[in-house]
Length: 298
Length: 229
Ligand SMILES: Nc1ncnc2c1ncn2[C@@H]1O[C@H](COP(=O)(O)OP(=O)(O)O)[C@@H](O)[C@H]1O
Ligand SMILES: [Mg+2]
Image 1 (spheres, rainbow over the protein chains, first blue to last red):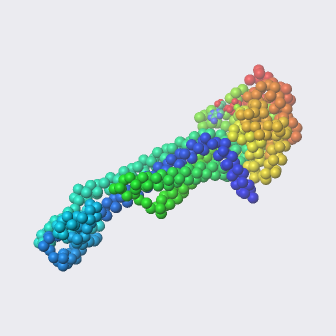
Image 2: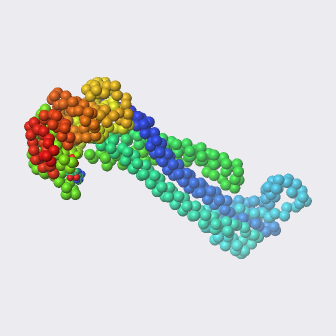
């Protein structure tokens, strides 16, 4: 019964206090929102860099062009030999007709075949994919052996691309981790100073309450609820900013920057937004707790 | 009602706040605690509401030692005591009504009981028409009257006031003293620290004088002459 009244009065006091301390509340909400937005953005950035690195890795392949005198049957018979390559993922045979057709559409000229007078200068080829970029170099060395593979005329692979790729993925990962840590530190500092400011103004208030004979529980309830609400409102604000902000960036990149494909994963987005909401709630609850703890022992 | 048994208070930095205080205050008494600034008056009142513990001796309130109270028992102990400060100490973000109501709500009282008690207390101090004013919209005397209403709203047995008129002009101070006297006449024990000789001499209450932490005088119906200091 008493607890019920405590909650009832506590809830009313919370709303009243939020309203009467609008300025301070706004600062706190914005602090929480800022830190959570940055944290969410860093998380999405990390997910994107991983995703893009994965994309580029997917596109890494070794293209093997066959001699023009190799018959179609011999060419097709070659495939099982590629399975011996360490890290082998797939090998796709590209007959020269397909290659020509592909080239034609790429140049937008169906008359390319006609221009060539019915002949096809392109060779048959295999596109071989490997599991890891690091496996490309040994695979190439293996394929270059003309005794095992006399049918192979030319091997093409992006040596530079592969090496840069490996370096880039590592750099991105480190940069993202550094960003998240840096942001966490800034956020911690911001929240800490906001709490200090609140405590400075609320310390006397808590003292007075204790003089009047209020129990710690009774003093705590409104501060706890207030922290909770500030945390939740801040988190919701961060969620809104991230959701619409990411959507806008996604649209822009998709329409204007062709060579980058950004991650568009609603499930991940929901997960990040929920995590931020949970983080904000926790932050608000813990923050208010830390703020009043030292004043309760009067 | 209140008993100090050989109470001494030495602060961590070595300053002596009170030395060997041995007094008894009976139910219904009005006691002035006088002495120069730094004599130990505030230390006396703070010990009495258990804001701090004595380094030596024992303090009994209603026969019970308050030294032995556990931290979580302190709020309940304080509900039997009304405290009035020199600087009023009202919650700045709450109206007069809300400041007084808080003390009743903290006990878990129902809304109607809260309203009845607060209205009664505010009427007693003559502030029924200032209910919705915030502290910064009230004069010093009015703020102190809100603080008195807050102190008496739960009908405590004891009221402790530390220089309640210290920030007020003589005329306003008289008004405050009238209210405190009325409360005392209804049976509430009052311990009031002050260094205002005028106020002490106009009344004829018991006077306990402190000097450098020691009790140097305890008159049943004393005055307060400057040459005593
Ligand atoms: N928290 C404290 N720490 C150290 N010394 C204190 C503290 N509070 C009071 N004192 C000292 O104790 C003495 C008595 O102070 P106080 O009781 O406040 O006097 P009064 O209220 O009569 O002016 C003074 O010398 C004062 O400086
Ligand atoms: Mg004092």
